[in-house]
Amino acid sequence: MSWIAEFTSGEHPVNLIRLFVLKTTLELLCIPFLLWKYGVSASAIKGTWWAKWAYRNGYSYGLLACVIGAILCEAIVYDADRPRHQDVELEFFLSSKYNSELDQCKISDSSWPQTKTVLLRHFEHAEYAWRTKDYKEVVDMLTVIKAGRDVYGTFQVVPSYVIANDLGCAIFKLQRNRAFAAGMFFQEARTLVPVGSPDANIIERNIQLLDQMVNTLD
Image 1 (spheres, rainbow, N blue to C red):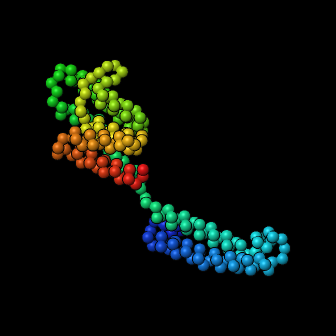
Image 2: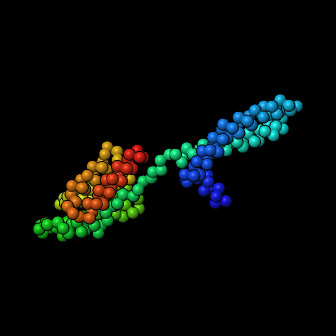
Image 3: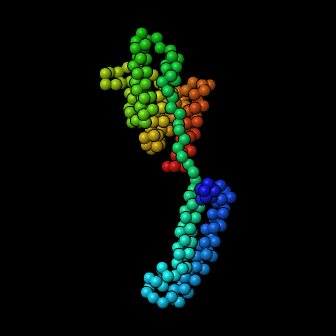
């Protein structure tokens, strides 16, 4: 039965051509011919309307089969002609990446070790939310880091391409690119990432994927 599934999938170009030929044959030849024979047969049958046009008319079954077949072919061909697009996963930077970025910061403030601990704690919470697909919580936690303020008070704001990139990923999950919010965060990440960093390529890829998905799905 695998050949039936392969044929009706409409995914292979040869099968798609065969389906199109079958659909055309059913619609232009078989169905008109059976309609004519159906009417001729009905006029020769004695009995009730139901007998003449349904169960005693053998052409009714063939006509029904051809109509169903034509509808199925039409649906398969139409579905195969539609562009096949799906979301490609944007790359979300993890806490190890954020920790490395913080290690590169040249901050001599004596409170920096404590501040870094707070930043990482919030980020790890956001990372957990990302893994559990709680994207609103991801945005809330990353926004706290970006703003330098939580329910306990304020802390140092550290511009971060990791935070900007991950906000773009989470916002896209929540609302696509509505109001260009996701795109703007990816652009911010592009401006913050150090020149020559391998992460710059990841951010560029996220921007390209965002453009492709928005153009094809939204």
